[in-house]
Image (cartoon, rainbow, N blue to C red; front, side, top):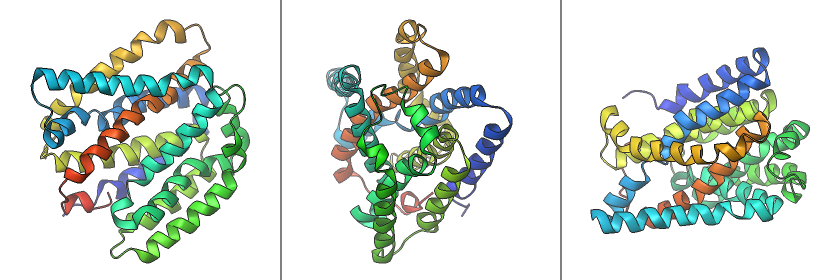
Length: 292
């Protein structure tokens, strides 16, 4: 059996982003963020229509249309608060992102371990590099990053304790369950926050989620995976293009950061809701339990 992709891909991503961070500068990081999320990040959520078809029985034109309209409505509902209460929206986004990222380990480490893992993913860069993180978050919440930012160190401490508890109580933890948090700590210490996010999201979370979901859906080769992810990925690119006239009125940095992070905030909500609905009907498989 070949080594899980996370064994080599995530460390490689950390090295690539470290070199980019040190040698190329902020403009290159912005380009890497936009391109990485568009090409490597979005496809893992682009399997959602296939998940709905196989696990929830969403077939035929009428049901598919209702599903897509509901999916878009949830995304829009998550998007609207950013205009009126950006600080609150940012705080809520950080929390449900931690929960979502933690679900990668939930089946092995339980609720406590998964929550601890997710808290570390999100809040390590905020705790270790507060000034650089605050500069990024200022583009998303001009009124201030909120109390979660100032409590990032405590949240990391709580996350570490919960993760250790989950590891101690797990029957069969995977090597990735302790290896990845150590690599995350190293990445949050060495990398700029944007480089850290690209390394984690594009080189660990997204490929792991894509491969596990594809296997569970019976998509075992890359042509079938590309056919399944292409429609939703292209549709997301098109929707992002609609926001360009408004974004181009801002600086390039502001436009990229808002497009990526507020866009992900909107997409993550329907993605998580679908996962919650589909999870009870998901069959487990040894491949899907690999920890990547």
